Length: 205
Figure 1 (cartoon, rainbow, N blue to C red):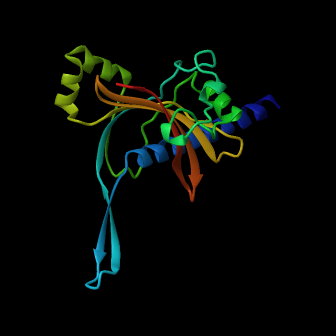
Figure 2: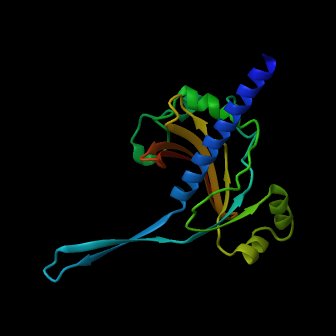
């Protein structure tokens, strides 16, 4: 009986991590996509067709999620609530207690982030130790000598709602010590893809 329950727990854990990887992968592809639309017109001015081109993006991604930086004492659920205009991105109206609690619980530990498939461009995966060694030697200057203007990206594990159709995640992206941003994001699954519904900026440099 004990073995049976251990097996069930293992299967559930694997399923959760698989879903998390799906969310992270979908978010990265969505967040860093660069779409160019070119409209082709007929001679009479009518639209003939719209050509869509996905430009390649190049990023540096830390190959593990951020952990131990989130707890309910530093930022409570209520701190994400905001009733003002959405254009100011000062809160998340779609966040719920399940997503929040799941986020806090999961981010006590890390998972690997090294399987972003079908990304239009290139991803360089680095460990925290590799980044630390780079920044010990002239910091961002050394990073740019190696990776150019690619953003350095870190992610949290996503908190997921009961229906598994929405997720809550943290991302930070920097190209210099004074050119970075950190934000919380609400994602929603739509037509099989995870798309950004809301975002809340928490720091900018």
